[in-house]
Image (cartoon, rainbow over all chains, first blue to last red; front, side, top):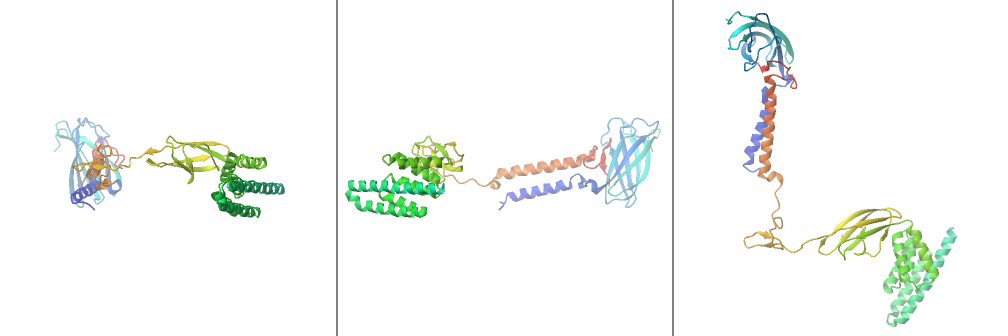
Length: 137
Length: 277
């Protein structure tokens, strides 16, 4: 028989176990769709430190802005890759607009594309970034 | 061969009866007050011999043993040895023959020779146990049969195989040893008994329990320790371990979002992977 002071502890442990189950978005590889994007930097694109991904889902309409890497880092090389992990509850057309940011955080390159989410599967997609010739509008 | 053996056995038995009867009679004559007991012993011997002659060795052994109890003539060991031998109890038979040879030196040479021959033949099928114990006066049993107290003057004859040697001494914890005996070999057993202090623990004025020597005896008479799951520290440790495990699982699961991936099914990327929507 559990004493009164042990009950909260046991509940806490159960809660921790539950949190463990939901951790990291809780999605196992089979429970999410993956869009793997390869960046192709066209000639004239200045040195990039970060990319800004604006993902738009058509139905239901949703926008998501993500930055890769999360903190600006070394120069991004052509052929760099990033991945969007999308719950299987999201499907349909995915519009992507990608901006390249220089060391000052200014969007100096841009590219876009469109793909269809393969539910529970992976889509490999390449987007070319071209220089905006200054800050992108 | 069988006829020869039967004749020899019958002859030896008859010889033994004569020897034992004469011994009993002689002793009865020397102690007339025990004449009735001696007469009973003679009667039992006669009955035992008759039973032996008809092949009822168990009944014969009973009669011989009863006769010995009434009148402990060492010459009766010969009869007891024969009965045991024919009952398939080689160890008891050897012991009886050895006692006969040791204590009945005035028996006729033919009987002594027969006892030696039988004992020697039986011993070829047996092994021996040599028991030693540092504490004299320790009672030794082999397979539950008491064989004497230490120091044991002689090695113990026994059948081949595994045997259990037990030692018991007042004031000492009993000890048991297993020993494997091989035919024709001597198996040595050094059995150790450890003293136990049976004096009751004392309780001081403040309630503390001390041993007989006055030293604190934490575990003498102390309340039994609670099981593991009733201890506070157990739950604390369990909580910490589970929480740490959950935390590690969260960290590992989240690490997939920062790039790398691979093991979790997320493809390896140079810029990382993030959840969208």
